[in-house]
Image (cartoon, rainbow, N blue to C red; front, side):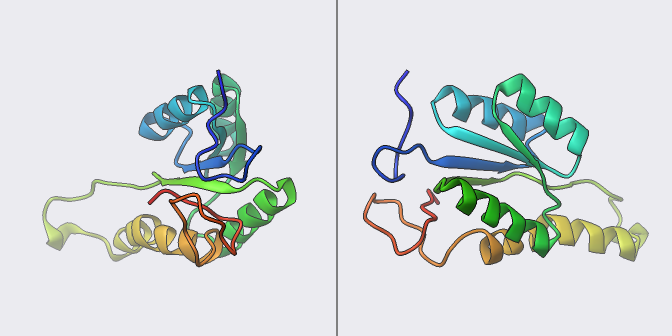
Length: 148
């Protein structure tokens, strides 16, 4: 199989980072992208689960709490050290559920869900994605090249 290079620099394989990748849709996405020839980095808050998932897929893993700005910086630094362009960022981490009646929602539960589902996405772009996200393969002033 020829590695998928997409918008990555000529001769290199771009990295797909998948949050919430230790199970469910995230894990299925990791398998699909790995099969397509991308370098896959599965990220999840659960260290044991993400390590197991990466071993099963045959890819790399990293423990990542999407609500932690410092964790996103560590991820960016990891990619920079590997000189691995970020080609795809799958922001899959999230949580659903809770009481059907708004009057039954606990404030702490609401804040935790908001931090995960909204702040986590904002943190991803603020800390791991450089200002330029290119999809046309043109040179970018940034190491990040994403499909959005």
